[in-house]
Length: 309
Image 1 (cartoon, rainbow, N blue to C red):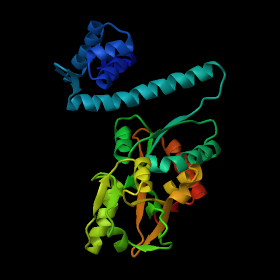
Image 2: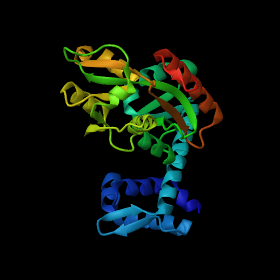
Image 3: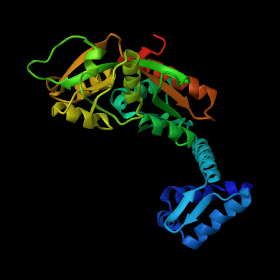
Image 4: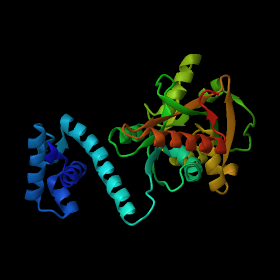
């Protein structure tokens, strides 16, 4: 079994899985394809399971392969961290902690700088890597061992660890007859909206609120990705709903943004979304508590409300 956990073989297996073919992986690794096939076969023999389904158009992970791939990422990261720390000790240097954080894109622009500053304060010397990823993808990255922390949109009934609650605002092209001030949710739902595709946590939140009022959600366009939705709104293709802090961060970054879009608070009822945290299994408790503290500092710094508020 230990032969399957050889770091070089783990790297070979992961590259094959990611490339989707032996040929593609051999090119990436600059390794002869027969040698690569041999090492993968040796892993399968050691674990006694078929990890790759060989097909004419390449390879695909079996269920056992997906399990092995997930664990191989954790093992490879641990080996890399150990070698990095031991190398630093050998050079007489202070060892540094490395953490990887995935954040859903619409909040990343405003939150990443705040988190980076907070981590520098709470965890000095920490090397931090950020990845933007939609909520489902961010959670998948946790399951695959590719990130340590995932900040994601959480459904009301999802449970788990919740961080913040963010106001959702009605956003429309600013026309001469634009009305300022709060807008009832029923009035928002009277418009055909530019929304992300079905199943997106923002879309699910809006649909649940509409159902509670006994009203339908009318969709003008489906567009995944806030930047593209924003462009559609400005072009007059329909209004939308977006998170308050995502809008605030982009207003500061985009010249002329405030003149192009009109933003109104949604009321009756107030519409919010929950932001949750997932932590990779194997992250030590000290690191998890320090990151939680850094996230609290970051959230306070940009005005995010605690999930219990």
